[in-house]
Image (cartoon, rainbow, N blue to C red; front, side):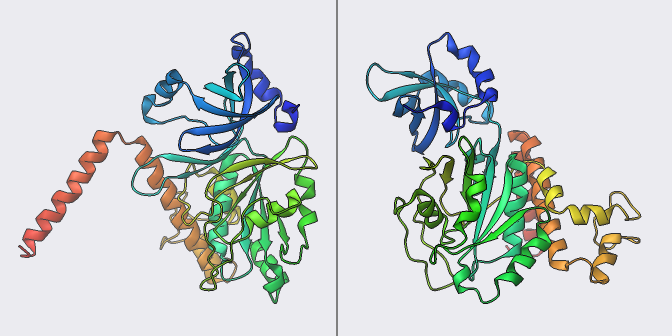
Length: 359
């Protein structure tokens, strides 16, 4: 029989579950989701779940769907003696790692919910990219969980120390570990995060070794692993769905599919925490609203000119800041306003078309 505390249950969820206790619902944690079908862990084992019609209707109101994601806690009704249950409510999340869905639609996609630690995994091969790590860090700090950077494939890197130093320069205060799943070295460094009742999510591009690391923690080839493409160190999408798993020695891990694209979601709090060095330097700018482009008295540009700040890091900061601002603008615009802005853009293009004599 499972104990809820081993699944991550605590006083926070207990408080929000109270309203459902008299309804005889059972607390369960989503461990897998696929096309609207769910699997969840409860005190008496694993259940196949589906959401109720009322839940589906209410979750879709207001234009922002609130359906369960892997890692979520739900209130569900067990159906007889079967290992099946109906989900009636979603408990509030303590933390959530989200990204914007691909394309022009401004909607949230939850990668993992109620997590304590985010393992940002990157490969020490051609996959290594400081700008991508910065993006993951900004999103991880927004999630409410603590980010940790894992540099996998140390066995094929000639100067691991230099790579660690590079990551330290963009991630002050963040724990960084180098390891090799091929040689089974460095995995033990993760043990302090893998405690009973604590949840960690593995995030990163395809082929960086997330599933291989989890297999090492599980003590066997539980998750399917494919070879990495020799061109560009790109991996195949071995993991095709998100899944929550319980480790033999305690602790909970969430495996996620490789992310080819990570569009920002949330506010700028995580951005400011990731680029705390730039925020600190910017306090010396002459103007409070300095954009660090060409304003006189810009302390940030001065830091770049003096070799104190990497210009690539500044460009990364400005790019992400622009993305967060665009997201905020899109979220505040009503559908009608968005359509109006779109029509205005089309109108300008048509006028330019005729003005330039291209008809």
